[in-house]
Image (tube, one colour):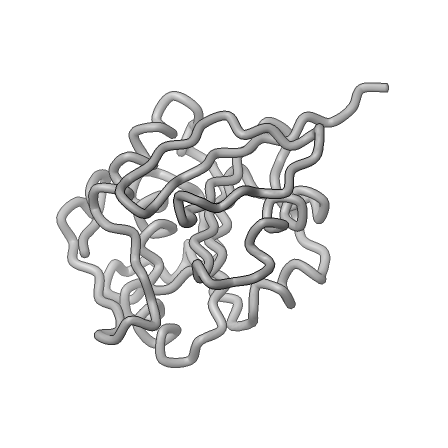
Amino acid sequence: MRIIAGKHRGRILHTVNDLSVRPATDRVKSAIFNSLQSRIDWNGATVLDLFAGSGSIGLEALSRGAKNITFVESSSPVLEFLKNNILNLNEEVNCNIIPISVEQYLSSSHSPFSIVFADPPYEDSELPQLPQKIFFTNLVEQDGLLVIEHPVKLKFDLTDEIRCVRNSNYGRTAVSFFQFERSTK
């Protein structure tokens, strides 16, 4: 696993050797960031990486110019890899690690982010409600994006305000991009 583009291009990232983490493949990560190229101004962007794992997605955003990244990860063994990846890139100043579950993180109040990435466990029974939970806790800035990596067959529980603006399949993996349209009434 490596950083694809930006100031850390080609740098190797490490993760656990077991199957407890499913890092985004270079193909999927490349597709995500190619899709975001015209939608996000990385300079000054704030990024939230939920279910961060080794930090591959958040560190890719940082390499491309994001201002800072907040990583949320609860697994102690995985956290060590995340911390080491950040240290190896010398990016401690631009990264914030929150070592709690995503559910705990969503239950507290936070400033909104330009973009929120989520790569949850595919077997998570709450996965269909994830876009609602994220948007209704105001974690995404006005005109910001939520990007979720998920199983192809998953159907999200969406409201009229949550719009899927892009969905792409990569084998058994899909990536969906969501925006929230606030009512102007």
